[in-house]
Amino acid sequence: MRALIGALFLAFCAVVHAAMSGMPAPVAVAPGVYAFIGDGDAVAPANHGMVANNGFIVGPSGVTVIDTGASYRYGRAMIEAIRKVTPLPVTLVIITHQGPEFVFGAAAFRDQGVPILAHYRTARLIRERCPICLANLRKTLGEDEMAGSRVTVPDRTVEGTTEVVNGDRKLQLLHFGPASTPGDLAVLDTQSGVLFAGSLISNGRIPELRNEDIHGWLAALENLRGLESKTIVPAFGPPLSNDDIMQTGLYLRELDSAVRRAYRSGMGLTEAMHTVDLPAFRGYKLYGIAQPQNVQRIYLQLEKQ
Image (cartoon, rainbow, N blue to C red; front, side, top):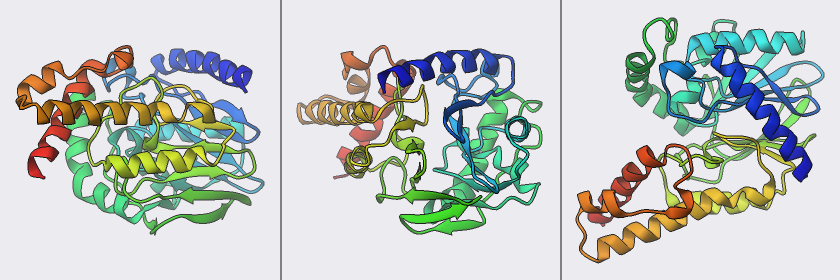
């Protein structure tokens, strides 16, 4: 297993290089299962917004796409990359959550008549909040990069954990209640044991708290660890093994405890944002940006209690 993860890391490095050229390149993580691995940094013109992970699963009769990237252009590039792997049609897109780095390529699939599925709470958040996310991405990446991008609300929804068969391949859509977002889905390919974890797991990158329920998030991670998946594709960073799932949980626990200690001590919000530090995670991507914002979010929640 460690050898496999090591090989995937090398593939990840190659894909990051490919991403810098403006084109996604799929990595085979198991027979019939492919991942596009983003560079894990903040969205910026230099990386064309290709920071998050997504992928596709090839069944005997069709392809399932999982998350669609930050732009229409990226969605189109995904379609072309999939065609180089298989002549089979894409017959379903699954959106794991409403993060802007994951949803705006969906319009390219909608234009080809592909149904788009998400948890109903994710669909609602896409409708309500993604217009603002799209405007922000346009400011960051520019009109050319975001040309054709639009808010695409999923036309199929689920209310909880369910099983679907698409392209004659069985997939489990796992929902454990509100966690990193209200409508998180993780997608398990039962044939290969590959888990697309959506925003529940990041690898080497600080998760950005936006719509979270930390206790629910931690419970979801424990449930995912119990699945003993063979390979996990996180929201950001290289694929990892089941043994490494709880690195995200460790960060959440330490963050929550540290902010609570600062709040109980009478420390003000501004001081907490500048002083609550988690040394074990300083080397993670986005630490300097996301850590103060995460501290602020938890602190403000404590003030409301």
